[in-house]
Amino acid sequence: MSVEISNEDKRATYVVLPAYNEATRIQPVIEEIAQKGYNMVIVNDGSSDNTLEVIMESKKKYPNNIHIFSLMINRGVGVATQTGFDAVFRFNPKYVVSMDSDGQHSADDLDNVIEPLVSGKAQAVIGVRPLKDMPFSRRFANSVMNILTRIFYRVDVSDSQTGFRAITVDALKKIEINARGYLISSEFIREVNDNNIPFAEVPIKTIYTPETQAKGTNVKEAIKILIQMIKHQF
Image (cartoon, rainbow, N blue to C red; front, side):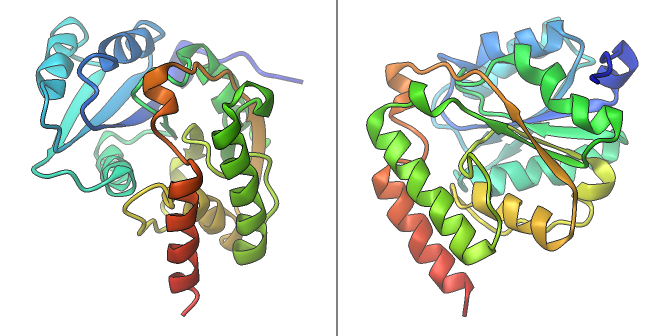
């Protein structure tokens, strides 16, 4: 039985949003999250466009919900996410979520994603995208990465490459993320599994546009991640 997410639960939740050159997409994402009562730690990952200025515009509207951190150069989604994970501790949250900042994920799913944490059914959550909605190249790459995650990290999940995940702050303290790029998705799952953190899978919506389809784990990225996985075994 699901529990209702209260305003107090939302105030105790911080959403980490790594952002690299998302000036044309990020504003509606962060403002919708703020309107729902959630807090955010947004990490500007050395963007070369006006992403930072757009974020600051939204912060003027929601000064208490939005906290901005900037990396001087582009370090990759893994480093940016870990920067956000490190930053949230200063705000004493109970729950931490990470989402994409390009509009691929819906803020409408936030309540469902944190519900297993709030109810105590799990200490980590993986948002599972519907495979049928993925472009073929993305669906193929994701299936391959699910298999590789099972082989290298000995954990079976439905969507190893999702960028929508949640974790309690106590569980977050136990994990260590070292990936720079998209390997972070599999590494998060490995750390959750290796630290015996109970996790749940929750279905989420995915919004695909030409811009979001151009990003994420395609076949080329899957090959890069495989090479990194092999290196990490030695």
